Every structure is written in structure tokens, then in C-alpha cells.
Length: 112
Length: 110
Image 1 (tube, rainbow over the protein chains, first blue to last red):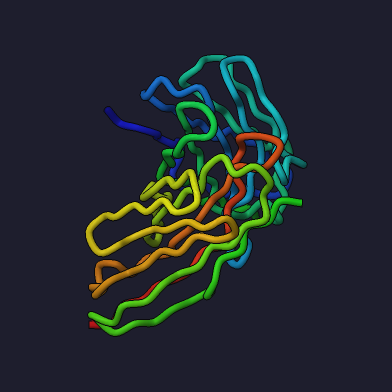
Image 2 (cartoon, rainbow over the protein chains, first blue to last red; image 1 turned 90 degrees about the vertical axis):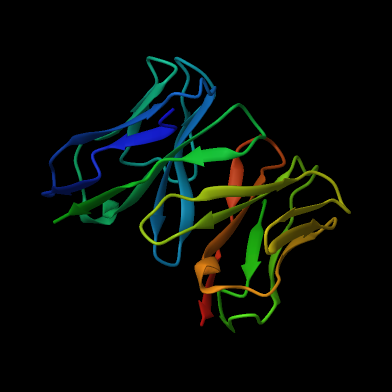
């Protein structure tokens, strides 16, 4: 039982490049979330999903897209990376709401 | 607008010096309050869920309590390994999606 895993762990992008972050969970959770964490700003919700095939915007969705084609996976895409997207990205899942969330180990992204 | 505020932002304690962290919230219709611990370079780890005023939960040296407007995380006789950032989160009044506070960074000196 791996819990929540994230791929990759680190990534450096140049401005304008694109990439996809992958989140996988093996707990059969309905809800999945993508957060970014910046110094002094706390965890901010980017997008979330309340079930397979659904997605919704969070607090800071601009510049990101997501997809949840399979229940266990939640993908976060950056179509044209900007330096302002330099951050640590965390994926989380929960049984549904309002239950505790389980977080992945994070992806540290740097955009130069 | 739903708000979650944690205080203090940072706290330094000597080993064995007990203290409390605060999480105040302005959410209508509380659907639970969650405490997490986050170690440097790692994702947050779930600690407690509290659902109603007066409820208390304990785990080792930590005890979480809840009132109608705030929650406290009491740390009794802390050890250096308790050093971490402690986050609280509250589902929004209109949804089950949690809003996180900015956290309290706790350092316990030996």
C-alpha cells in the first residue's frame, strides 16, 4: 500500500515549456486535490476532483489544467510554464469530503 | 469569506516546555477541523479530526481541542522530534473542500 505517489520529485523547466505532473493513489479515494505551497503563503488549492471524470477549480487555477480519467490518477498540466509557477506541488486524496486528506511527497518545480 | 488563521507563526520551545498552538476559523456550519504535521521537505501528515465543540483528541504529547470559534493544539513536555510545521484545515461553509491555515512552525530545542 503505497498511499499517494507523485512523479517526478524534482523538475526544472524553462519559461514556455510544458509538463505534466502525475499523482496516483491506491486507497480507492473519491476526492483528489492539487495544491501548491509557497513560503509565507501556505497550501493553496489549484484544482480538485470529486470523482472519476470530474474536475473543478480551486483558489489558484490560472495557468494549470487537470484531468482525472481514472479514479486512481490525477494529472496536473502546465501548458506554458512561467517563473511564477516555481513552487512545491502536493497532491492529496481523501475518501470523500469532509474526511482527512493523505498527501504525496511533493514535486519541487523550478521555472527559469 | 471563509477564513482560517493560525497563531503564532513561529514558536521556539525548550525541551519539556509545554505550550499551545491556535487555529481560529470563521466558517459557517463546521463540517470538521483537521490538524496536520508537516516535516521539512515532506507532505503534510494527518494528525486529528475534530467535529464538534468540546471534543478532544490525544496522540502521545499532543492534544487537540475544539470550541465554536477556534481549536488548540496543546503540546505537553515537547521533545526535539516534535519540531515541525503544524497546519489546521477547515472545510468551507459551502463545500467539503478544506481551507488551510498558513501553519505554525515549531522548533523544540534540546
